[in-house]
Amino acid sequence: MAYFPNATNKYEDLKSLVKRRNRRLLSLFKHNGFNVRLIGDPQKPAVIWDEEYCISGYAKNFDFHFTSQPFDGEVILTVKLTESIATTRVEIEEALETAEHRKVFKVVLDKTNDLYLVGYNYIDPENSVGRYPVFAKHKPKIYFTEDKAVEIADSLSELGYPVKVI
Image (cartoon, rainbow, N blue to C red; front, side, top):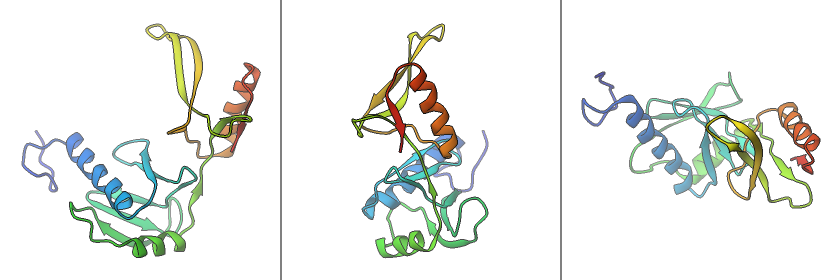
């Protein structure tokens, strides 16, 4: 078994280490009153803010680095992801206001404005037959480009679902 420098003991594996780091990352924002969730690869999670923006920054080990812009921006604030939150809401707000963030897109049932595409189910899940969309009020499926969201919306429209991209 591999040993990781931030592990609580020498037997903690990478999966539990990443899980602990991501809990602390969520705690950093939620403790300071921000509505966020993590999506994507647990080792490189995207932080979605108010279901509207992907925060510019990245988690590395037990640090979160706020960057000035997505992908290749310079680091403007580094926060240690510890059990007790030492960073204030004001510090986070300053970092968020200074940076440029990516807008994210969602597919919503037209005229409801609160039922979002959250995923897909299958009539026969074992054989992946009969795929159909699932709509709900929480945790919408996030698209990082408008083109991809429009492509999905168009395919759902062709199946008779009245949807739009927001």
